[in-house]
Length: 588
Image: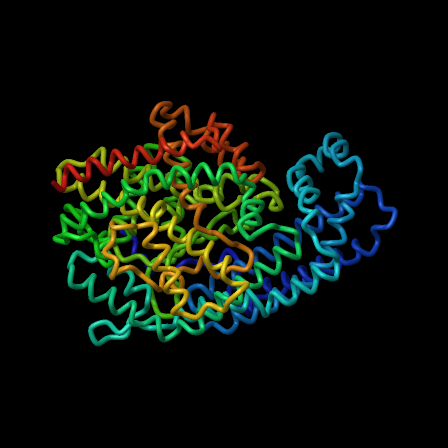
């Protein structure tokens, strides 16, 4: 067995902040930014073809260098938020890149005025490779401000939303929880929600809630400031609302969102049935207490070592696709993953693509529960998605929020569904079904509460500054509207607004409905896989590759799916409803 140290290897990027390669790349980035400025100053009379060639060439270099440098600093900072060198480099890079705002705006305005863009893209093989991103520039131009305004906004964001977001990350990674006489990291306390001992779960939950008042005032100032900046930006750019902006950036129509949310509402009572049934099985008569939401059931209360998790995942992924199997094997053996919680490390889990090496880096807070294996599968799904889009130019590797959860959630469904099919005992089957329903409840019921909460925050922010008590009240109402009588009301989590980092982004609002989209879209794709078998795998990879160069609706059409039809979303929800019925039968 491999002796896993639990920390990722960042040597593919740089060997520390004193690395000469890092210094050289910072200098090369500065050169690229200067070239961008020179291009912006010589636009008058420049033929459209020449402009597009020069802009894509400089854009490639600046994007690759900034992604590599920012990626390194952010990865270091994520595992040690007290690392001053990482914070300093991120600040320096933000300042450097703020200088691109004005020239980028001038050039993008010039690109939007090229009269024969389609002809140039059709007749020039080099430009054809960038066709999607160039057409996107033309579409985006209607929301661009003036050159000077874009520069001012970019500079001010460094000390605005970005700084508030960094403060939030630092608060949560440094705050400690007083649990049984010890000071433990918040992420470790939240991991105890999966413990097999009900006393541990309840006490850890109460201790977790007790830590938030230490930082809730600062967190409230961060959230209020970020949301006001987003509202002001939307008004300046011409978006009717932050939701309209989020949908535009998601390349997703309102009709698709309405179909998704509408179908979720129809099935909300079914998820409350699941929660109440779990509550009864655990000895609670009036709904499930929040602290028992992740209580393990059945016979999967064992802990898995990292090596056991690796073998578990490889066994399942190997039956689906050799490319996925081999990538996962590399991720474990080449130290792509930072596994364990420790002080100063951010909570949760994420995947970070490393385009320069065609690899990814994955952060988790692994504790050995089956849910942690599912989390690994989820993040490795993101990494597999990265692998599919690495074939595009770096200017066309970015996929939007909704489809970002496609491969990750497909991996989850693949892992848990396969495990259920292999279950040898009733207790094992119960544990696996319940684990899948736990996750489904999060991406349907909890995500709906987060969607309601963020909507309310944006609706109220113009008229009031929301202090912690007010934010807790809005969260309580959102959770009550979503969970209903499925959760015991006096155990709802009022500080979910503080512990979830998705609210704290100036450039990414409503990072909630994409999880529901991804979960149900992935279940729809899994249903196709069940019908087509291995013939589906090439289509699946092509679909993932297309996510960075298509709208979500056009991507889905590749698999014959109409996302604006509520019937599609009902199919995925009904498959979960059937599992809820089976779960209720098992616990009864």
